Image 1 (cartoon, rainbow, N blue to C red):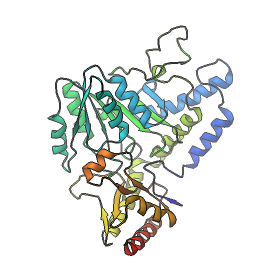
Image 2 (cartoon, helix red, strand yellow; image 1 turned 45 degrees about the vertical axis):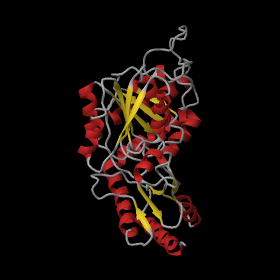
Image 3 (cartoon, rainbow, N blue to C red; image 1 turned 180 degrees about the vertical axis):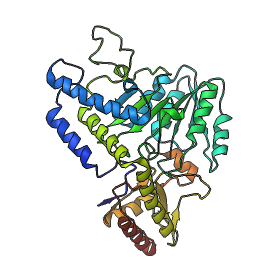
Length: 378
């Protein structure tokens, strides 16, 4: 199979990541921060090295980097942990369910939320966010780039809005981190990232990176290896948000993934993956019955492209492509809001998302497969 579903999970993984995970399983079997023996200490040092790598990559202090299960875990922790009684939250019209669902759950209590429509125009998008701000708005939680269309939001402008109004800016960097430069210096207060996507780490890894300005209440309490005589959860990071044993091998592998991205260079990665998307878009434009969901007026896209073939549902197209040796994801991509905005409900789209390991030859082969399916579609 040729994997073009890297927006879900990047595969294959770099050799450095596989080596780091193998080494972790063989050499770092202790419980970090829990014991004073050599195995535990060496494991803690390896985990701290990964934490430092993430901190350097995103412009944070190492102690303000929290390892999570995935980006969804990080977003739930950030959103529910900063929400207060009666607060108002703003999200975008392109949100993944990992933002929408925790916000909607909070709205069943005393909180409320509004949805800012994302336009092809950055200035119009910013105006749509701005006009929704009320005296009770405490959080803006939004994606940096859509996992459906790849459209990049004007997140530095959104950050400026948040700073001006004293609002916590929580950013979903699941699709953007590792592809385009993202830093707390952009004005983001809490950045949530998936370790297993464009950071090339193992599955079951994610990050919550904070500037420390906003207190985050923990979703869970438990053993941290610190303040063990206290009944209350420690109030300092990362311990307050890392109850229980972390995914040690995953964290070490994620550190290696960040190292891989840093060594290769995001400019190079973005350039390569974007070129593959341009090839796909340009060649499928000439195929009848194929609709590609890209707007020439949009300023910038992540390397993600959604499309459909007339006469077939997205899942039918994806199944046919799978039979031909190509892995793409069909459906709603856990992003009902985005597909509602795109007008592709209820079937969704087929999503093409290459990685740095894909080649032009593979994309040309995919285009040929799409053309074959389109020509035979009833």
